[in-house]
Length: 207
Image: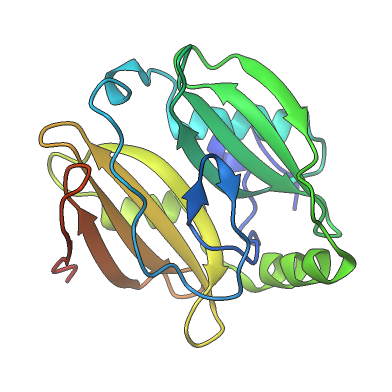
């Protein structure tokens, strides 16, 4: 199946063995599901995000030919907020593409360290197992007053199935809500809300 421009270029078979946990912009690759949301973004960052997540995804896929989307996160910066987009080739090798979250400009591409043959194999296996597009996962969790998507990542769920973690950032009050969506059935499995920085984290009714 070939890619088309933008979000439509993302094949239904996408994925990466990873959690949605990000520390200082560094991806922590694990074999387990994400159990806690990342800290809420500062209120100064979100209003600067003019280039939406799907534009960044399209830029990354254009930059790395024959690649597939595997994850995206929003990184605050003293200069500009930046989208960190990870895409993988057919063998599961990952490339990191940086895209400006203010104007959508391509900022650079690199190869993340620590990729082993085993990691690439597991990545390729989840790519094959996933059936739900990231945009479809976002559409499943949209609500009135829906904020900005600040992160998407595919990881292995508790039953070994691929699961999308979708992080939605809301400006007032500053908080983030993380949803987990089954990447095969599109069922919303759970949601968790993080309050303002230093605030509590509580489960939500996602029915």
